[in-house]
Length: 229
Ligand SMILES: C[S@@+](CC[C@H](N)C(=O)[O-])C[C@H]1O[C@@H](n2cnc3c(N)ncnc32)[C@H](O)[C@@H]1O
Image (cartoon, rainbow, N blue to C red; front, side, top):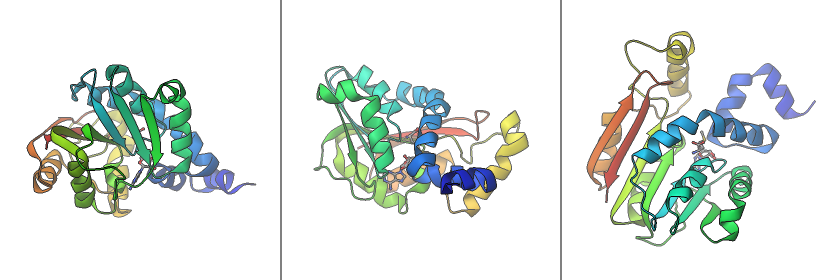
């Protein structure tokens, strides 16, 4: 029996958690595909807030299997989208998903770390971080990196589906599963924040006009924070 199959049988929750943080091997590829389905509406909700222009240059940090990259590239028709992830499996999946746009030079997918973005200063009009901020070992460094690679006036967006914004009238998921899951995740070291936490951190990282919106009854408390360089 492979390690992945043993994990699925004996510790399914731990396997999912580990592979959300860094998708690895067979289980990582499987979870990468599942994330594409699970995060679709959250990603659409995020992209609606980005005001992407046809010629914009966009960086999606922690791009996973590349679904957001694909959706953003459809809007930045004459621009470029760069997906970056530290998981080689996700770089492969995201490259495959976007293969036509990669061939056309409109998309590139790179292996790299949010903690040390491999781009010159002032390279992008938008930097997005969807469902990845929990895992960054040094959040302020990650935000400073994003700030550095944005052009003046460029936009940062951080979206999470699990936050301190989850409502007092919980959804079915929150009631039967979510609250315990959120607290467990916090104990495991994930960064579980409120919208105000996010805007405070963005402001401390040097951004202006930080604001957030939340959908407290969606999933485990959707939150999307935006700010400008
Ligand atoms: C839960 S997945 C979300 C993927 C995708 N953004 C989505 O919404 O479907 C988190 C992703 O962030 C990546 N990630 C986590 N920490 C990272 C870091 N420090 N640098 C680059 N990628 C990171 C993981 O490899 C994983 O693909």
